[in-house]
Length: 385
Image: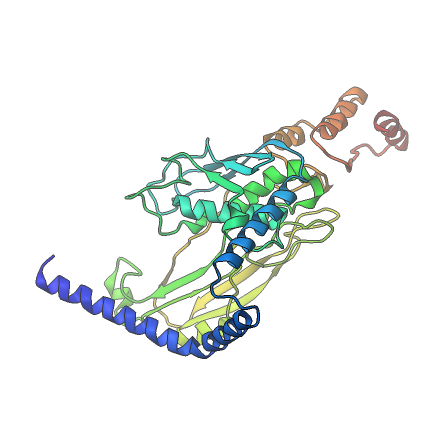
């Protein structure tokens, strides 16, 4: 590092420290009020330090989490999810073992490292996989070292879920935010209808930019208005136990969007349409949340660019449905095979098709007879009832 680089580095550090100080001063009144309440509590109970009460909270959280886990059917439950990836599909494979000492989730069998920035560091994998487990198993227990110690996450080095430097990880959320739905797929086998169906999982952000670099022809953008804006959007969540899913709601990210007018005010971008997309929640007694349709334009006559950090374009999520209604099992490859082979003309073939759906967990099934003769419909009823 030369003198100029060292000077620049020190200037950046000083700038960051000043920003941190500014933020601390902004939040100082809240911190001061909280510290006074803490001091008053310590005086009231004659406590000199918080070490003992901290250890008590962590241990109680650990024991409460173990108690919740021990109410679940023990065993090993496997689930896999295939998503678009960047240049080729990615398989996210999980084996969840539920036992007396906690829950272990192993992602062995998951696809390898990508040449693009959708790889996930292990810490991010641990965070989102653990979050998925806690959402179902112990959502009301504080999220701390004690409660998390009984949820153990592993992923083999060299897989896309345990990326080491120099693997690119800039858009790790595209892959990593799929993990709660992956662990939901495991938990559904142990808990059945107490687990939500698979949702969109990934964010669909509007990341738009104009000006230099948007096209290969400098003449097209010679007088373009430079801008760079981003806003958060999402599809629907999966159907919940006893309820429909949430429409256009981010999960597991939890981010909330600002009004689109904010981006319109600071850039030439205009949102011509932003509305729910009808009938995108799937069929069933409890449907998934609706997706959304957006139409985006540029009031500047110059071209602009969109950075498409998306997934779920080519490979859609699975649902807890058989044909058009709900069932009690999350389907994998068996589901597609059963659907493809379920068109039958004969009595025995139709009966076998119905039995195959029962074998993979369907608790209801809608049949669509293709014959106009009511006597034939009666024969169908005799065959399957």
